Amino acid sequence: MTSNPNREIVFDNVSKFYGEVLGVNRVNLNIPPGVTSLVGPNGSGKTTLMNLVTGLIRPTEGKLSVCGITPDDPEAFFSMVGYCSQFDSFPKGITGFGLVNTALRLHGMDDAKAYQLAMEAIERVNLVEAAHRKVAAYSKGMRQRIRLAQAIAHHPTVLILDEPLNGLDPMARAETMALFESIGKEGLHVIISSHILHEVNRISDQVILLSSGYVVAEGAIHSVRSDVTEHPMQIMVRCSNPSIVASRIFALDHAVEAKLHNDGKGLLVRTRDVDNFYLLLNQIVRSGDVELEAVAPADDDVNSVYQYLIGTDGDSI
Image 1 (cartoon, rainbow, N blue to C red):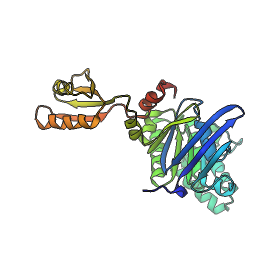
Image 2 (image 1 turned 45 degrees about the horizontal axis):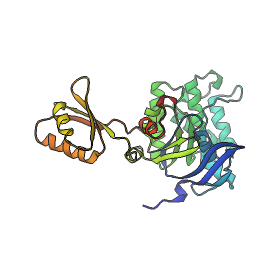
Image 3 (image 1 turned 30 degrees about the vertical axis):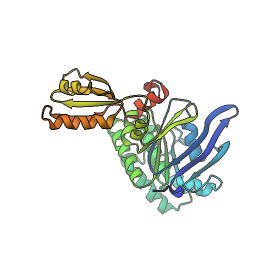
């Protein structure tokens, strides 16, 4: 299927420099709709990439378009984008409803339409009961959610979210992640920067891995992992007799390691040929010697792939 630039965020050889300091360099991306996560340590270029997409900064070199529209048409460009920063900044004395409603009025909407969209957005983030309370009295998680309501209220095509899960309790975090997934499934863009990698991994359709201003990998995380061929794939096998599986595996040239789990009911396998490993596993199961409970990759998550590519400690991402 050919790509459609009118539905994609397109970076065409984009570089951004702050004087002599590199923000991002020679970025070429075609980001499709869905949930896309930006992954990298501080200083990797995530914030610069988000600020370029929102139109807050312009490229030093190269061209950028969002669903076919460039920052040269600011009115159309900004109407397509919703941005939720990680930083708190609210007018003194404003209520949650007032914050969202005012932003919509600035978009040129009349009172009735602004009220409707403001309450709709506040309902989507589950803050209806607190809508008319002052934001200054909100918890950190509530402030995070009202900023999200402000970002989605005008029904943007592209939603940019900088650390959107910070400060949320487990229930609010789960509800917010479900909201991101539903927006992505509506055919919109949701671009997330987050340090909570295991949760990013759960909701992302694709990831962009950055290091020192360069894109080092991009695409669906499982595809990116399969391209990291210098690191054997790790697979966890839960079965009734892991020692039999281990003995058969060691007869294969592509098997690097087979380690029994501490409870004796599992096996961690490292192999350079995943397809042949799965074929062997099928043969062992058909022989009747082993009852298989579960098989799953153990290292095709965002954190593992980033460490393989960059060699950094995942806790610093």
